[in-house]
Amino acid sequence: MSFNILIADEHTLIRRGILSMINTMSAENATFDATHFNIVGETDSPLELVSLLSHQHVDILFLGFTLNTRRSQSPVSELDGTALVKWLARKFPETRIVLLSPYRNNTIIRMALEAGAKGYISRNTCERMLWRAITTVLDGEVYIERGLMDSLFRRDAPDSQELTLRENDVLRMLCRGLSLTAISGKMNLSIKTISAHKLRAMQKLGVQTDCQLYCLLAQTRMFDIAI
Image (cartoon, rainbow, N blue to C red; front, side, top):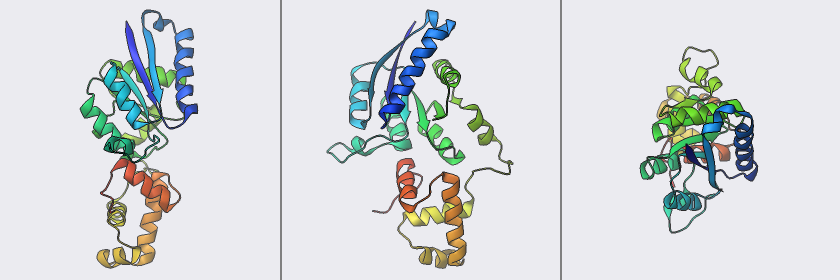
């Protein structure tokens, strides 16, 4: 049996790393004997990705959370993250999307699965996890890396990365263009408290600067960004 695999990520090192891992599995795993995997392409561009998917059947797409986006006449060229997952899942429903993400936040994982991803793995994945991801999604099931799965379903965990209602509200109003002072007035809380909610949300989302925060919120479409 033969399956086609496509790899898309902004980093050449990530793309070639996945390719190397698949080749290593093919050489070492006896269960590959009856299965052949064709790497039909790799890209760092949303437009080229859509072109590759349009001209050949792809069984599994390993999709990086970020691609090299740019403005063009096609709105697809500006998509990455969960926004791109949602678009691709509608356009190419037969392709199983495995999202390769640096983010371990529960909210982002759930958004990716709701957008249509069939798998979610981190950049720390190994050959064994990659093999499990491939076989699981080919069987029609959803695969989440073990460590991420434990965190996702343990809502009572003391180190849970789930955003609170207040943290969500602060991020939502920031995306609407409101300042911390304006948010403070709307929520009837001190600026210090609003700032603390923002900083805790950033820590949970794994970002350190306002620029990283807005880029992440734009990629996930968690809220509507005011332009």
